[in-house]
Amino acid sequence: MAKLPKLGSGQRFKKLANKIARNGNVDNPDAVAASIGMHKYGKKKMESMAQKGKARHAKDKSGY
Image 1 (spheres, one colour):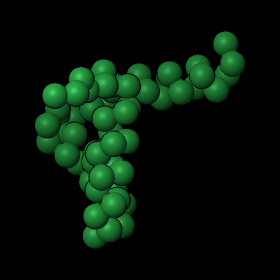
Image 2: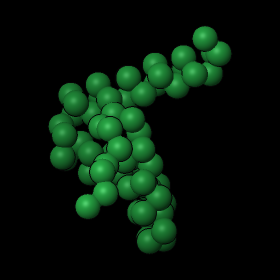
Image 3: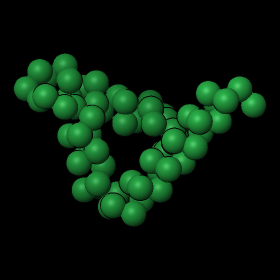
């Protein structure tokens, strides 16, 4: 079995959202992926991962 990307990196979320989008039955695949994550990890953990991802993204964009 292939090693999964690190939890909180956003790669798992993107992969799931892309898989849902390929199905073609959903208007907003990101919302469905978030719903699945909330069910699996809970609201608190998902919010924590989202904050870390946003901070990492802002840091990458700033160029520091």
